[in-house]
Image (cartoon, rainbow, N blue to C red):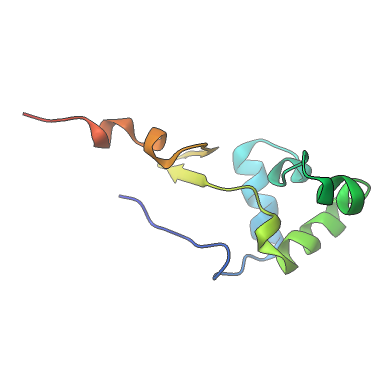
Amino acid sequence: MVNEFDVQKNEMTPRQIADLADDLNVEITDLMDKQSENFRKEYSNLSKDDLLQTIHKNMSLLKTPIIRKDETTGFFNSPYKAYPEDLEMKN
């Protein structure tokens, strides 16, 4: 089962964002698109706490999609790759 959480419509607290980074085993900066010019100009030199507040205030900065299944959390380029077993034909 997949529960959708639209980051544009639902707010996450800085603590939830930090927990998400921990679950993904990444740094806070890895939650953002570091290749974007916006990141390089405005966010690359912020502290961890400032980054958490920045993402909290502007959830569109969060790199998506992120999918959680059971105890696993990961970034996915395509939602179709997230659950290949759900796409298999069963006889």
